Amino acid sequence: MAQRAINSIEELRSLVGQEVGVSDWLTLDQSRINAFAEVTEDDQWIHVDTDRARTELPGGKTIAHGFLTLSLLSILLKDVVRVNVPFKNAVNYGLNRVRFPSPVPAGSEIRARCSLLSVEDFGGGIQLCWAISVELKDVSKPALVAEWVVRYYR
Image: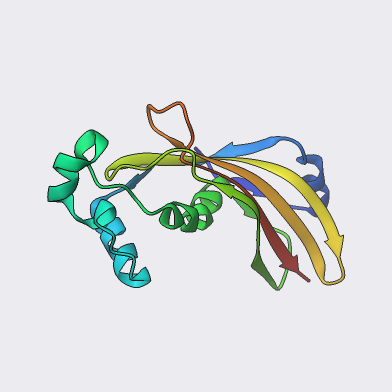
């Protein structure tokens, strides 16, 4: 999908309550899972032991960390939208809600479906709340659903 450029706060406000876009598919391969395990020191076998997963996990594959999938929201949202409003910076302000309804087996393709829930003014800029559902290719249940709050400072 093509990245959508948003060029004003008014345009942002007009998108509240709407789906803004869907990212391209991203493959979550074993090398990315292993790198995340190393950085976070979360090397539980379900994530990194491909031999054991082959015999002990449904589908025979390791599964990505939920927090790895969550950490990819930045790149997935960036694939969907670019806010071209002159702000000093944007800051990840936090999450209102996060759930991991489905596991992400190694090698899966994921994408994000992004809707804008709100645009609010605060003393230093504006705050956006995104509803994001991370979908798995060929799976009806999402891998992740979240409300993500991002602040843009003037």
